[in-house]
Length: 77
Image (cartoon, rainbow, N blue to C red; front, side, top):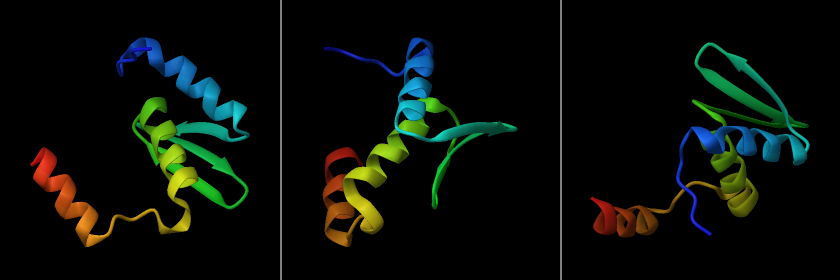
């Protein structure tokens, strides 16, 4: 499979967010997804789904450690 963040991924990302039980709304240029005590905001559905996936994968300790940040910077500048 090969996916590229483009207009054709917006609706599937939105539908995936809904399928995970989130309500979605927009305010100005931001989209919000909310479920129970969780709330996420991003500029579009693909980025919003990315935040949700990150939170689900990393949990409450979603922030990167100093070592993780250093490794990222070495790889990507």
